[in-house]
Image (cartoon, rainbow, N blue to C red; front, side, top):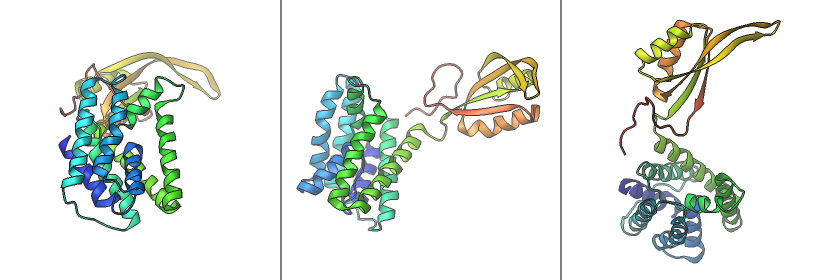
Length: 274
């Protein structure tokens, strides 16, 4: 949490604030208030998040709210007392690397079960009381922020700020999920018995078997056979090894991969403790 807060402070003071760039979420609102009313960013970011965290007590565990508050206060202290250098005034570099460091700080906090922005808490609170999804609520709020930025700073800065936000979002997701994000793999093969054996004994993976039928080809619709459909969950780093294993047993096997946002239980390779 501390490392993430220090890096977030670097993103704000080293890239965004000196160049009047915005980000999304409550951070973007804080940056906008800082520029329009010339208030200290370190105070604004804490003051803007506290009311939303109070709402969050109704939908999020109290310990999580406390950790988020601690992280936000740390960001405020970092921006107030650490003399971060101005890194660059090039707009594209600000958008890309300002977003990168903001996302890095955000991702490290997420891995610790915290956050440096209470926008998700607000979206979750609104989600429970409306028919909109959390993503739609966040998108709407950020849309308003960037529209105001377009009128206040001009369309160029607003568009660069959107790039900053999306860079931070992708970086934060990658850091939070890690390079070992879980991946679901489904395999349909005539040689499923051998593939099942190797997946369990060589890769050490747990597998689930669906009973299905294969065939139903054009011109041969009535020709089909029973088949075991194999499903397993691996890490992204193991994907190439699995594909090589399947191809060695059946080059014509049908394999498709799906992204898994979260997985627990079963025989899963444990991620590092955060």
